[in-house]
Structures are given as C-alpha cells and as structure tokens.
Length: 236
Image (cartoon, rainbow, N blue to C red; front, side, top):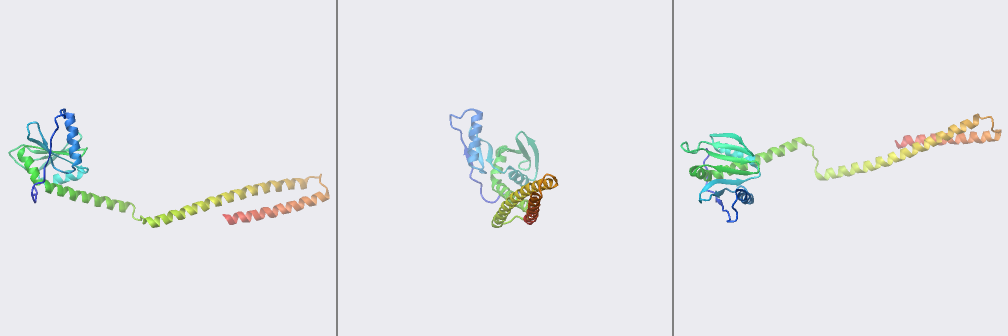
C-alpha cells in the first residue's frame, strides 16, 4: 500500500435538519450535499453522533475504481446492485475488511470500523492523486483515438474554404443540369417538326411551290438541330 504524503484532507460532515426524518429524505439530502462538493471526502453522521461511513461524489467512477485498486495491494472486486464493490483486506488483519461501494450514480462509499475509516482519511490525498493521474491517462487515450480516427482533419479555415468551393460547384452543376434539360426539350421538338415535314414532302397533295418551301424549312430545321446538338455537347 502506498504511503500518503502530507496531512489529512479537510473532512466535510453531513448533518440532518430536524425536518428530514425518513430514510428516503436523508438519502436525497446526503446525495445533494456530496454532489455540491465533488470529490471531497465527506462523513455521514449517524443518530448516535458517530461516523458510520465516508462518502464522496465523482463524475468519473472508473478513475477512482482504478486508483483505489492501485493504492491497496490486497483487495477483491465484486459486483453489487447498481455498482461495484472493492473489499480491502490489508489495513488491519485483526479487523473486518474495509469495503468500498462505487455506485453508477457517482457515489463512492467507504464502510468499515473506526480504524479502517481513519486509514482512508490518512490515505485520501494519495488516492485522489492516483485518480487525477488516471483521468489524464483517459483524456490522452481519448485524444489519440480521435486523431487516429480522423488523421487528415483540416484546420477550420481550410475546411470552410473547401465547403464554399463545394457549394459553388454544386450551384454551377445545378444550373448546368437545368440548361441541358431545356436543350434536350428543344431538340425533341425539332425532331418532331422534322418528321412532320418529311411526311408532307412524301405526300402527293402538295404543289411544286409548296414542295420547295417545305424543302427550305426542312433544311433550316436540320441546321438548327445540328447547331443544338453541338451546343449540348459543349455544355456537357
């Protein structure tokens, strides 16, 4: 077990107002106090005035779980309802073991006799320092995973410029598609007109003068059709 440097931490003591009588009301009051003082070692005072257990609240129970397991050499881990439990056996061989309940809601509860709870107070600064080291390790690992997942992430300025270029290109593509669609419609109309002219030329009911006019119109439509095809190819 690691030795704790420095003096004991300041112990926050929870008292219960007279109007708080039920077990549920006391639990809510206790949880409110420790949440308002995160990672501060807190004593829960029983009706007889003695310290029944020590508490703290954290938003990183995994870091504290690892810190406690690192600090105490001889321990056993097991599951409990709504959390995990660490049973520590290397404080006092002649006394019941110290148990640490780590709940999913962020509450950590140290339970034991007076000697074991006193030992927790002595070692708390070291345990807390181990928890802080674990938090830093977690942050570093998370940062490395993010950089591995997205190694080619661009600076905000470059990303904005790229988004603007993509937006401009998208707008240009939309205009091009509209233009091509209009030209295709025009080609379809010209093709229909060309077919109608051919049918008239093949008819025997037209005069020589009318036939020449139709031939001229047919030639004009053909020229317009060729020009439209060339323009369409240029747009694409």
